[in-house]
Image (tube, rainbow over all chains, first blue to last red; front, top):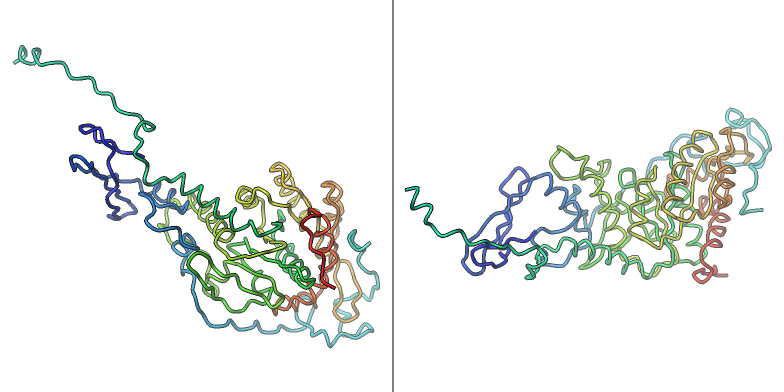
Length: 130
Length: 308
């Protein structure tokens, strides 16, 4: 969008940006010749749509920062330091639980009978391994 | 009074200049900003030889496990591998790869990826969120359906363009279920090398994954191969394989796409236990043949031979 001062036939220059509330963005433009100013009040929904692109209405004063959109729009912002996360607790043994590798024996153990039919059929080899 | 009005000189016709004629410049330059964002992605990926997406039309088929296993298997051979977790709402790849420190170093112009014990460079929304917190956008609650998709696309763009991936032989992108985000990725990365399709044997999976495959085809994205996951159940004690799901979705998709089957992997509690604990050793071993088959399908000039 460009704003033209009709009396002076000059393009009005962006001077400031304000957020008066309810998601409205007010971009103020002034004529460099006569000083007359206007405020462009944006529709909050349209403003949201445009800013979702990660662009700055009125132009950028500094280069785009890394993760600018992500850090400004997703709570909490990207942290620079945080404590180590705990390891997940080991779950009970079973078909969908943890069974330490060391407990695997060559022969089918009685404990696996509930889950394993005792079949020795192996999965079909994949094309990549043929 | 009416006579005076009729004597007034006619109004001077006014001609307003057009948008193009006002040449002092558009300070917002929104289009220029969008173009700059795209260029940032292109410049960042200039040191990445291949970008490959791991996709499925169905959730819960093991895309992240396959992604993590492929990445770890290739990293073990000395290749430089990155893994971008594009499942922004359900990120799991970082933890599968054993990245436990949820912290990021943000530099002036880039963000450092986390380095997994396997050597894979990782970026995930899991590293940005508080423990257990969902990805929720900081905006008014109404009409969010209009812009949430745009924000998610912007986040993916920043993961691609703002992360210091460095020189990579392969950047794997672990996609969320469905094909919508794949379109976004293909637009951000025009020279996407292709996709690896993950399915389970069932007919339901075949039907869902088939849709994603067709979406990729219509976007002219190469299909590099199919991985059939959970193709049987491997007993953790006797290591024998038994049936788990009925169906032959892997074979059908491989045949219909002409891409071939990269691997058929049983559900293995040993692999799963390792992945749950952030240890990719077993997953890398299970996916190693698939990883080599995948590399063989990439452009020969960009292949990196494994170290002896």
